[in-house]
Image (cartoon, rainbow, N blue to C red; front, side, top):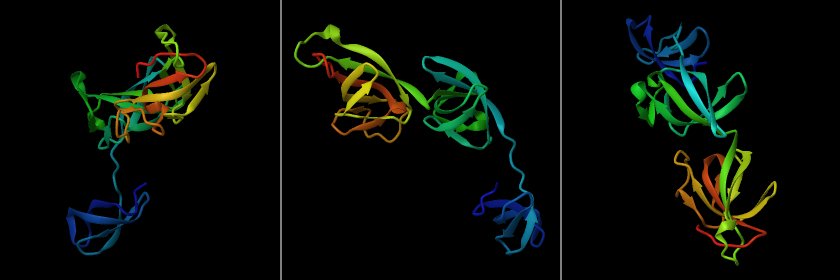
Length: 218
């Protein structure tokens, strides 16, 4: 549906029947009511919408990937870091663009939808967060440092300095490294108490085990 504040090009039967002028949309619909900005004549016209383009989408999820398709307005600008809802045969999910591939495997950060050959994305509704857990300070036993995967909703918040419990894991958050495509963060490494990041923006989480002891590389 056309937005009522939109301005569109159209011919005016009063002052320019053969040349398009700028018109203000007064009432959207199949037959749009518009007002010519040149002579203020109000009339109805039909605004032809561009046919959407269908493009391939590669979705990465939990270490695996699959391919789907998406329709988009051809003149819409898309960019790395943007998210959109993808309707697949298996599920409806939210994905984030990680790369845009044009012809001949050219990768860009931003492009018109019609120029994109493949959207490379990752699912962000539910995500796995890679975490490095150091033992509790005191023993200096490096072998007790371990890597784990935490499965949480994409919008789950981790806060530096706060305690977390996930299944058998219990730890204090000591640091967070955010992904390159994450937006809204002043730094890519967060290590001050109170620093916050949501799971879908996290590249790696560092924690201190609340039950063992240890060395830290953070």
